[in-house]
Image (cartoon, rainbow, N blue to C red; front, side, top):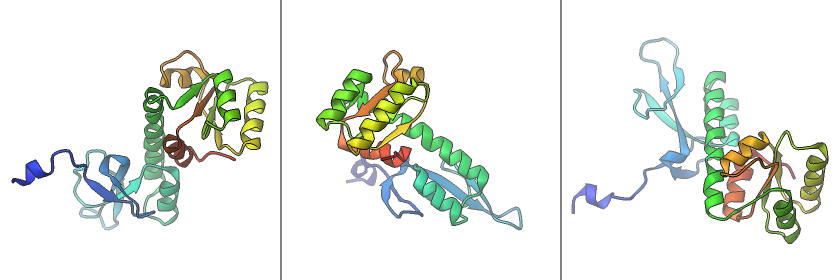
Length: 187
């Protein structure tokens, strides 16, 4: 059997230089150290995956990006680019969670999900009313559910294919873990 046939459907795996977790290549950000034309090595974010130089991979989450920055692996510019990419990546998970039925959207559904223990992570919009924001931060704190205040109502609604939503609750543990890692929720 040829190698090509054997590898059909397999995802290339890469190891993060910060947390040493092995993940699919698509879940990682590639950085390249290249010092061929200059005396000082330069570190750049490689979007194409084909730039010349010594490549390394970092998870698409704020924890690993900050660790890479603190360890001196990346500079301010690369850090900003990596954080922007991580932001886009975590937002791409919301429509998937919605299609999987793992989202409660709107105040009433979210309140029920929190009370019944279904909610594992809550996103509250920045432009929600003060009463709504206080109500859900208090509920999340009381029930020990991580939450984050993020985005605008229209943006949250668009991400899940609905009208404006001031609160979204993630009901699936696997998705909830992804969001709390990527958003860095409070508790």
